[in-house]
Image (cartoon, rainbow, N blue to C red; front, top):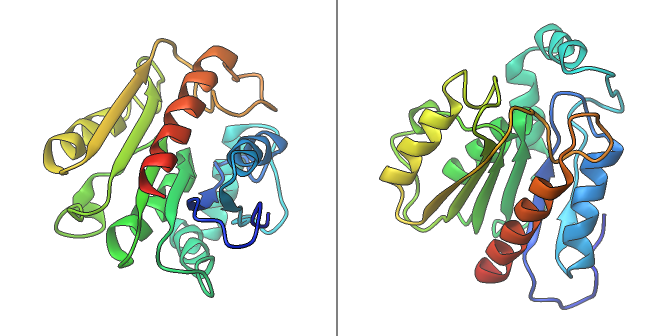
Length: 201
């Protein structure tokens, strides 16, 4: 995706897809941000492949290696300015969070449906990088595998951090192309994300 307009002072956002690949739903969410005037980049960490289920997608990740996913995320910033907001959906939180923590100049991080312990990528969260984490309170991945605990620890440790929990047990609930989509919750996520981007632009 390209900038909405030349010379815009809106936020510049790097969006990383989830474990089923760069789906139409991920593109649609990125499109909402672009229509709001932000510059949006949506790299494809799977090199064109998408998967019909999360299980298939995660088998692909196991085949290529978690390190490959993170490395492809790091490569996606080549040629882009330092002043990015890094947004990740589930699996995409890995490169998004790493870049927000370790690449100087980051303007913010938006972590959707996943959160990694801060110690995974360094000694602490940068004091000048605001962050939001979004997830469902009964999602077996986000709530059941420790991500929500990592998010709560991040909120306690970071200078500017928010955790938003939504009622439900769906994973990938923000992807309008999947059966797990929750329109009402995604509307709330989108509103909060756009407010965040307006604040950090």
